[in-house]
Amino acid sequence: MSKKKSLAAISLDLDNQWSYMKIHGDEGWDKYPSYFDIFIPHVLDVLDELDLKITFFIVGKDCENEENRKYLRMITERGHEVGNHSYNHESWLQSYSIDEITKEISMAEQAIEETTGQKPIGFRGPGFSWSMDLLKVLDKRGYLYDASTLPTYLGPLARKYYFMKSDLTREEKKARKELYGKFSEGFRKLKPYYHDLGKGSKILEIPVTTMPLFKLPFHLSYLLYINNISGGLMKLYLNIAILLCKFTRTPVSFLLHPLDLIGGDQIKQLAFFPGMDINSDRKISTFKQVIGKLKRHFQLEKMSIYHKYLTEKLTEA
Image 1 (cartoon, rainbow, N blue to C red):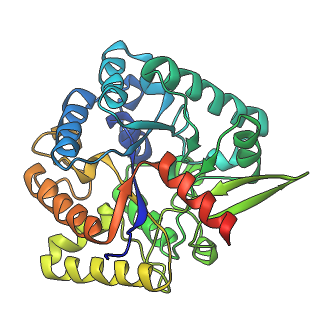
Image 2 (image 1 turned 45 degrees about the vertical axis):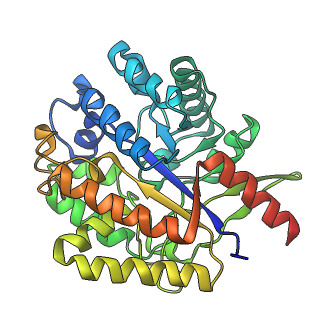
């Protein structure tokens, strides 16, 4: 009798064209240009082909535009689920006051539910930003989990590289000083755990999984970068990550971003962005390879199902 596979979660942070431009410091981001008309039908067709249902973390601001709403509704109509990715997608969310956080979360929550017909039960901060005040707001509003942490030591290096490639002013860089997290994020727990919020309250943290022991990222953005160097090296890197996750019994939460699945050939306005020189067909081919490998080892699910699985496991422990 074959052994039952462990569950793994697949999620996508649905950052729009304007949010990439905003983080990069490009003019015109405040006109809120969107590529949803191209990206969302594209990714939904790919997911259908793979018979895969995932969680899309949506930015509330994108729900203001009726054209965007038409495409965002397609996500739940096609059987996927939604999460809260903040309202304004500002990676300095951890510096907000508790009142500002409450407004940010509640506005996004309402906009997402009205647009998609589904109320978010999970949150991921833009740029992996989070704070204890944020967690308390999430708990108060009935959220079941936070998924904002990325346990890796490489955050400062990623931020430095990003700043080198950006047109940000000194003031804008200061506001984004914790983008991708501090070096100390690498010391955070890799396995899901409960945050103690005091007074008997707690909320589950589902970290974006990095490679056990080494804390090296292996979400799709990194795998594409490695694949651009060598396809064989990418496969080896992924195999090692999966092996270490299974050996250490680390549950897998695998992260996607829009630019992982579409290239500068389709989104010409972001052709300058790192990795956008890889065309869409090649990105999808790599994605299918990665999902095929993950499917051989895990049962891939949406975050809500994964959350239930984790809570049962933690209760048993």
